[in-house]
Image (cartoon, rainbow over all chains, first blue to last red; front, side, top):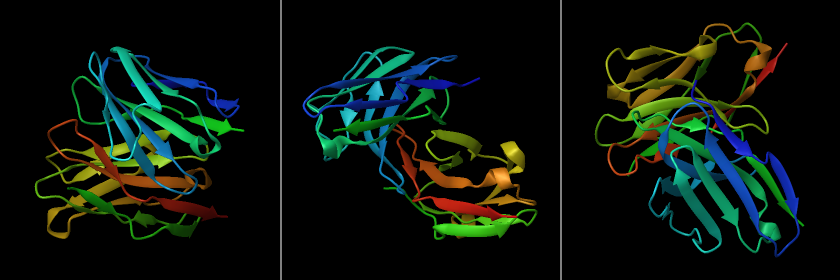
Length: 115
Length: 114
């Protein structure tokens, strides 16, 4: 149980285009989902916290207009990188927290490369 | 604010040897503590967690961790390491309240040599 999927697992896009990444909790409901960014050989950096039915809470320094987050249901959150630039290239990981509990379950990650 | 320190960035052990990965946290109250493992290019997998109760917790893949309040530590151990244990290990703490954000340590990369 407690499986989280991400789609796509990797994507290459051209500079200036937008990319949408999906995060789904497959066998549990998640009122809260989190989006992280991981640079090579570094730890995870929390970008935003997404609560179902409400606006996401962004961490300091994260542009909310650039990284659009939508949490439309208890099993799906999406991250859209708008007007992508090469510096947005990174490994993006989502996690989902069950409605009851403190642990988070992580998706497999999405490798984004912007050319 | 809570913080997590993993003092060892890189550890190398021989297959079959015992392993201990260190983790120290800073938080005013009793935190919720976790250990995650990440294989290259993959997401994170939860190894074990501590919320309350018995301070020695058992996890998956033969791992265990011990919560020591007096030392503010939550070290991860395994009695006999397998080559498949080579990965990056992250200690994490969750503070109660709010959106219960997870704070991760910088990670310890484990290399296993035959």
